[in-house]
Image (tube, rainbow, N blue to C red; front, side):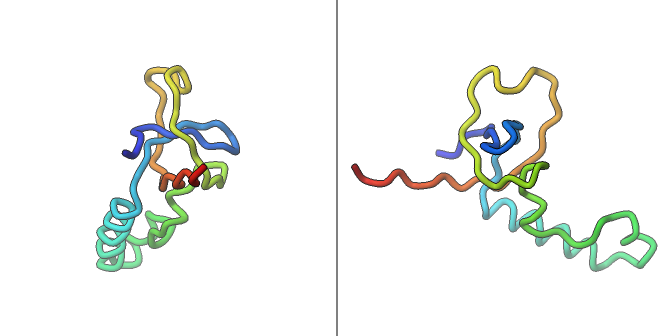
Length: 90
């Protein structure tokens, strides 16, 4: 089960977890919208979307489930790609 909130190992920032399938769906939808824009419309964005947009703001890509108290109520958080690593057999 994917946790709702995850914490970046690098900077400790909390984000909401997004699966690869969800991220790819969002990317596909946005890129179709973006490509249909004229140049003036495209200038409002930084370019097409990619999985790079689903990293932590610090650039980190490794996350652990967040614990209660890791993020204060009312904080703004962003989405990150979270793929749990399988636990190796003992």
